[in-house]
View 1 (cartoon, helix red, strand yellow):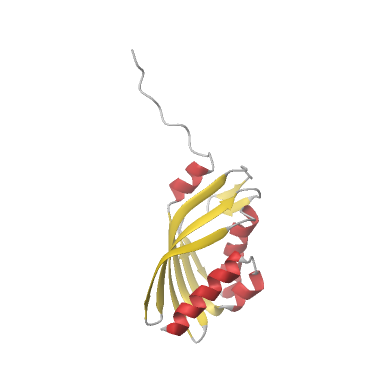
View 2: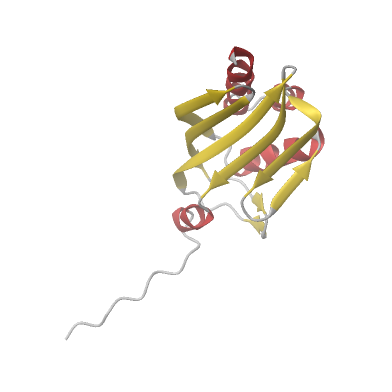
Length: 146
């Protein structure tokens, strides 16, 4: 149990340090990864590319764990993601040019950690909240007042 928590913490530290090689080294060669937008990846290189897309789009990206639950090899982390969108962000729907906007949103990461490596990670976040904070959603219609 302590090993799973340690690897999860080291993975988050590597992300926050923007240390792509450390993050890559903590993933199993056959890691499975899922995220919103139909993202289904397998393999260390594919997951590293996904993380790099976030770090390219949000060069000051930072995740803070608010709550954590550990059960055997599984670690559930409720986090806050924060960053400023100053670079192009490659998302499931294509590239989003930099908006210069700051974002802060909740996410949940569920990971399985075995033999010192992440083997299965599932990331959940609200895509609509993200694109709204980036200013990419049309303003809601307002009712006319008479």
